[in-house]
Length: 376
Image (cartoon, rainbow, N blue to C red; front, top):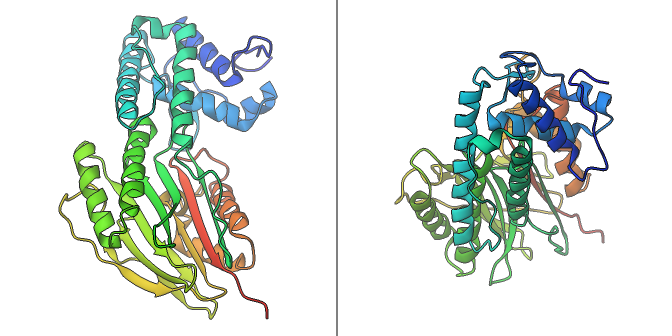
């Protein structure tokens, strides 16, 4: 038996993370868990229950979304101050409103499956409805996952790979490879402000706009300007996105790019020089008529392009120190000969290790593009 007295039932058909959510919610309702009562650390609970760390983190993320638990600055979990019945109802009602909004927006984006029937707020405090809420979040997550590339591009002479790890079930980051009509390929990485379902739906809006506009063979600055205008029309006033969009010619290695408020990607040239790609403009959605600038450069054999969202560079150690752009670049240099996929994975792992394994407070996304050295 463990601190939460949870007996997981593998025969029930209910995922383990939902069973954890149900038990914590039940104990809050009956008064066994009071405000600020500590919850077991994710790793300890995972070990006690003999489940994966991801399962416990998923359960804790749902509890935070419901307003039942909260994360302390040191990464620990406690029962939220507003976990009493009335405040729980309000938090749950807000979550349902977000989900209902997600459904309406998803339908506009041609997502054909209804994700949610608007539930009764009172019923949400019951275990069955907590399970249903978790299931709807999973469905929304499935819709979003289909926005990510199904596989890395197969380009002769190039090694390209990306990876994203959301801090919740549903993320606000995006990476993509988009074929262009003239044979070039667009590389995109983006980070929408906020988290969860609202951010994920805005990611969908941005994803759709980029695919449509890049199919029209427009100048890159026009693509970003029009995507910016569309995002501004779709997003609330306090929602923006960092976007880096590049268009690569695989034949020549020429790459043109626009950095719209995203963490600047870098090119680690084979000769030891480092090129930082800052040129572009402001965050997408900030000013609807902003005119962006294009930067042009060339990737030579042995050069490595690397981009990441701030969930990587702003990962903090237990002492509060940031991972930072310097460690990002140093890691990139030390993995120059690794595959793009291995480099992306190792960067995310390095950020997690640097943070002491604490649950990430932001999504982490990496995109790597290596021009291979031709062996004569």
